[in-house]
Image (cartoon, rainbow, N blue to C red; front, side, top):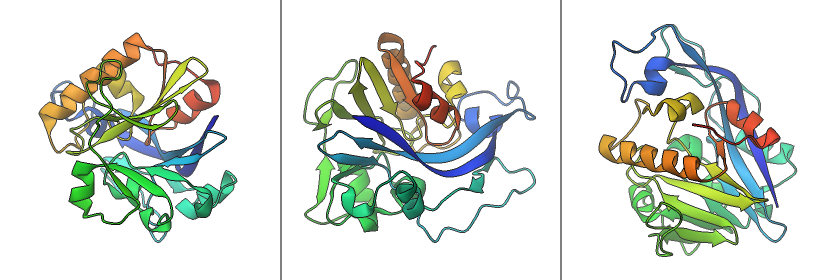
Amino acid sequence: MKIVALEFYKNGEMKEAFAFGGSMSKEDIDMNKIYSASLQNYLIDTGEEVILVDTGLPVETPEFKREPNQKLYMGEKIANFVNALKNIGYKPEDIDKVVITHKHPDHSGELRLFNNAKIYISEIEANAMQLHGENIIRVDFQDGKYKNFEKSEKIAEGITMLPAYGHTNGNSIIIVEFEGLHYMIQGDVTYTDEALRRNQLSVVFENKDLAKETLEKVREFVKENDTVYLSTHTPEALISLEQKLIMKL
């Protein structure tokens, strides 16, 4: 098995007010503090199946511009989704399954390429996106308890999808068990890893109470299991993946 990052943008920035502003008081936020930002999704090759987690932005998305007082600057474009997939040695037709963490376009923007793959997405998000088709697997988490999560859905051997509601109403995370580690592909539970360490929410959520509950569950999971924490919006994740770094809280 191998896990590979599809890299789209680099050298981005996010302000602390964006990364922590959902739960930290304004008085405690450092308005001058900047965190590194990027954009990447992930691919899992089990040797039997190729499973893509999220599908990046639509290829026609223009490059992002750095603006004054910008809370999040995605960064400089490395590649669009199709080219990023090509850069790691795969084509859309190689993908057997696609797992979507949530509906936002930087996670679901190229679903249109995968009409011949099984697409796993929570029923809540599938309804919100009005997805239809025989290849759409509307996940309702019927496979029982997994670690400290009450519900789960098995995607493949060693690959589990978990409900992680709050950022969006149907947000999910993916756990890959490999060589004694738990690789957590967490979509946007946090935008920067420091938010996980400091137990803070970003400013982007549909249900704050559920987002906080999910963050607490993720922190409990990380404390109890050796976890490589794989974010979408920070380059720290690329280092964690390459070096198999275990998240410490």
